[in-house]
Amino acid sequence: MHPRSVSTAGAEGSSPAAIDSLNVRRCGPSRSVGGAGWLTVGHTATWDAAEEVPEERSNCMRILVAGGTGFIGSAIVRRLAGAGHAVTVLSRRPRPRLAAVEHLAGDVTDRSTFRGKLAGFDVLVDAAQFPNSPIENPKKGWTFERVDLGGTKNLVDEAREAGVHHYIDLSGVGAAPNARYHWFRCKWEEEQYIAASGLGYTVFRPSWVYGPGDNSLNRFLSFARFLPFVPVVGNGKMRVNPVFVEDVAAHVQAAVERGPQNAVFEIGGPEVLTMDDVIRTALRVAGKRRFLLHQPVPLMKAVAAVAQFLPGRPLTPDAIDFITQDAVADIGPLRATFGLELTPLVRALETYLRG
Image (cartoon, rainbow, N blue to C red):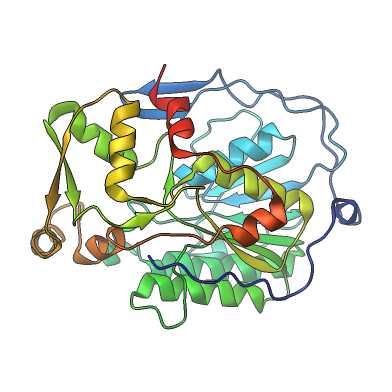
């Protein structure tokens, strides 16, 4: 992934006071949103927490989170529900985790499944991804063009008709009109569609997101459970500033409460590291000592060329390209606008890999 300058063109973002001018719903009494802390199985953790939603939040908003059962989406849902907002998850299948969160059955690729059901929502957060992303599966319709771009268009069109005030999108670092890879071009097109829609909007472009339940960093740690080494595709020199999923969720909450910024912000962690640095740090925090075994990209693409025809399509050549790109976000504009702390890698890992 290649960093790209952040666009800050457009209208100024709403102040907190301006939020009160929106059609804001008032929150009811305090509600429980789950069980009690991170529940860790191996190196994968899921939320099992009991948080009390603040009583009678004066600026409570009704928020629809598309993709709210996924890795990033579920973190956003927990954060918003814990902050006292009225949250509904739009997903194909209900997977209730939090008692205070409502569910709306729908498929972002089929507008008819949620047509006429977005009325009354103040904010729509688009965190939808296809299963096993970034490994596309055209036979199942799991592609960047159909889910990321097409799904966004469906959500934007329905949100505009429903009178949604603010559209918050999770795009990706590297989005550009002339990008080499089609997934970056799809992300760019979805951003442009949102900006041209007339909706108030805020777009975040995350770099490499990690945290409890992710399918990337935790996969490396899972190898360490039964192998004397950790396989790494490429030379391990890919540059990233990995961002903790809870930091992404915190910035989405801030955007909800500040109102539309009508701008695009890249979001990454405070440190630029190589992929080898990230993996070694995670192994150290987890108390594992393993050496890294680098796999040449041409070899892995040859393997992927065969693997893409296996049941479940476990790997594709495009996915090899995706995971070996730099992913460095320019976090300057993000910090200047939101002023929130970005968690260093070690401190974030210690919250769920230790104890």
